[in-house]
Each structure stands twice: as structure tokens, then as C-alpha cells.
Image 1 (cartoon, rainbow, N blue to C red):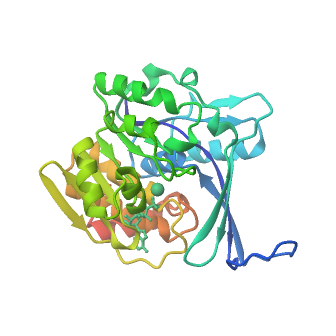
Image 2: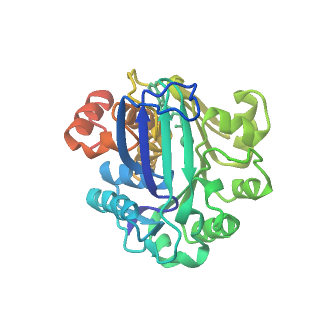
Length: 313
Ligand SMILES: Nc1ncnc2c1ncn2[C@@H]1O[C@H](COP(=O)(O)OP(=O)(O)O)[C@@H](O)[C@H]1O
Ligand SMILES: [Mg+2]
């Protein structure tokens, strides 16, 4: 039995650092550094959960191309179970994200590829339900799966799993009904601050969190360099972030989710879950992309044992 099962996006992130924001057309623009890391919000959560010691089953759709192979290897190598992943034989390639890093902010360019083609027919329900918890990432990128997700989550909850959702951004900026239906189907919602406001259609975070916590039992809002807050019907707290000098913040939200869920499935208190989320998110910012800091086991252990007094074993 798994601790967490996840169905969602997997691709590689190609990150170019040191690119000026004003990018003139028809000129050769030289990056100061380049990294290729595992990407896809769902894949980053799966990878980092496994690095933190949870048992994880992951279903994603990849092409038969080389980039798909590398992405899958990264999950296998850290111990994620990928036996139900699908290698799509058609002409569509594995998705890819190109990130242009401008110091404090970035351009994010994504080709969805096979990640948008995964449908409910690609998912083995018995495999997904053989777990304590099910996590959904990148709701809006799952073009083919989106409409089936509410029923899938309801069924998994019916079978005894808890369910979490991190939608990430809506590229169309609609936050429409198909998303709103999901709110009644999950136990934990994990947006960042901007996403929380858009979800609730409110201008300030407090109002947004109040509204969201009437829809979802546990609302956790990630607040970048201000840490995170959690609200349930009768509990509210904020936890400041750890001090970090980020290389980049790519995958920080996903790494937060991994830390939070690694404790949640152990039955730890919600304050521990958020504190661990802050720590694993800060850890993620110290190395390129969302997974590099977790691939270096010694570095991860040493950072977390210092910041959490040995809560992660
Ligand atoms: N500069 C930073 N210093 C320390 N922690 C950070 C920093 N930026 C982000 N984090 C951590 O990463 C988490 C997620 O970041 P955030 O940007 O809010 O989410 P997302 O990546 O989903 O947009 C935050 O809640 C915080 O714990
Ligand atoms: Mg996010």
C-alpha cells in the first residue's frame, strides 16, 4: 500500500539563468547558466515525497522520446513506483517547460505535449486507491482529465483516501466552474496567495482564505518569502518561512506540498505539516529547479535536520 498516489504532469524543465527581462527579437541572447531538471508539478511532488521517505505511486503520460525517458528515470531512481505510467506511441512528444530566469522573476513557456492527453481511461483506479492519500497537481494543464477529476476524487474518498489539490495557475485566467466543482471533492487545498485570491474572486488573502475554508476542510496558502498559513473551520495559524538565499524558486510550492503531505500521511499535527512544508520548500530553493536539492540525500538530510530538529528521518 502506498502513502500517496498521484496522477498528473511530468516533463523536463530547461532553465536558462541570467537572461535580461527585455529580450530583443532577432538577437542572440546568452544565458549565464543552464540546468535541465525534472519538471511537472505532479512529478516534482512525487519525486520529493519519495526522497522524504514516503512510498509513492505515480501515473503520468509521456512520449517515447528521449526527454520522456530521462524524466521517467528521475522518478524511478528516487524510488517512485512508475509501473502504471504510459508511454504514448503517437506523434505527440513529452511536454517541456523552458524557464527564462531574470533574477527575481521568470518567464515560463510550456509545451503541454502528452501531459494534456492523459485521460481517465489511462488511470488504473485500483492502483490509485491502494493508498492513504491521493494528490492532484496542475488541474488546468490536465485538459483531457480535468472533467473526470471530480468523480475520480469522490470515488477515491469513498474508498477511504484523503485527497489534496494544488491547481497551480490557470493559464486562461478563468478559474471557471470545472475548477469550482473540484472544491467539494477535496480535503486539502494548497494554492499560493495569488491563486487563492483568484479562486475565491477576492482582492485580499484574508477574505479569500475565509471563503475557501467554507468550501474545503483544510486550506493551506503558500506565501512565497512570507511562509505559509493554514485555516480550517476552527483553526488558523501562520508559520514564517526559513531564511534562504534562493538560487531559484522553481518547484518551491510543489516541494512545500511534498513536505506537508509527507507528515500528513503519518498523522502528524497540522502545524508540523506546515512547518515541514516551509522547510522542504526552502530546501528546494537552494538548488536549481524543484528536485535537485532532494537528489542530494546528504545535503537534504543535513538541511532538514538542522531546520526541523530531526523531524524527518
Ligand atoms: N525566498 C524564500 N525564502 C524562504 N522560503 C521561501 C522563499 N520563497 C518561497 N519559499 C517557500 O516556498 C513556499 C512556496 O512558495 P510560493 O512561491 O508561495 O508557491 P508557488 O511555488 O506554488 O508559487 C512558500 O510557502 C515558502 O515556504
Ligand atoms: Mg504552485
